[in-house]
Amino acid sequence: MIIGETPEDVLFDSPQGHQLAQCLKDCGYDFQDLYLTSLVKCVGSKEYARCVHHLVAEVMVVRPVIAICLGYNPSLAFVDAPEVGQFVPILPSTTVLTTYSFVDANDQTLAVLHQQFSYIQSQLQVVKSA
Image 1 (cartoon, one colour):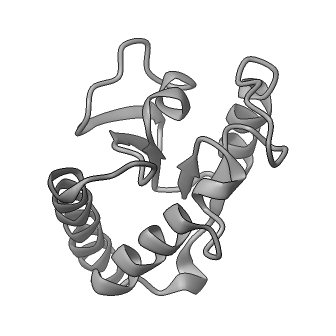
Image 2: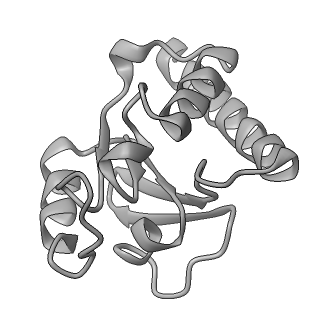
């Protein structure tokens, strides 16, 4: 599961969504294995507090092995003081990764995102082959 702050963060036709899609492609992800969502459910809205319970419920229903939170605000839904690169168990079978957003990403943050997505993909391949 990949969680953006707004719908534009995970829509592949937006600039940040295009960067996300390219990163996923470069790291070898099968797009059919991904579940994309956002903290804010309405395009153009920034009302985070009104949406947190929807996101938490969505994670509880989908039960992903990993939920990658792109940015600070989506991370706050699950972690009190998120820091980039934290892996935090939130359910018995779900871990959250707090990381950068693709919004306003620079070369350094893009490199970190690529490393994190590559690491997760390699771990998921181990789990699939076991």
